[in-house]
Image (spheres, one colour):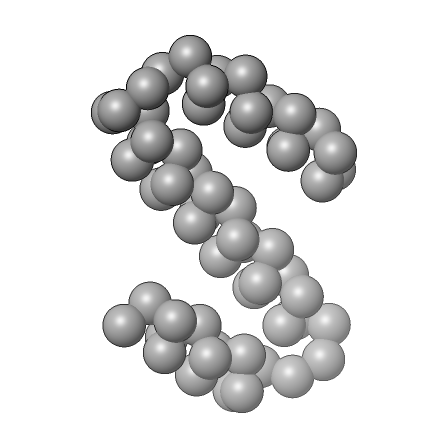
Length: 57
């Protein structure tokens, strides 16, 4: 469902806006995954996520 939405948005928006939308969607997915993983084991998430964000920016 979410993937379909992302594909539709990507097809509708072409050019520089696509990258911005993808960036936002990726960050949102990262946050969702982080929250999901945080429920099972907090320690790993607190270690991993900040590293990925730092390397990404």
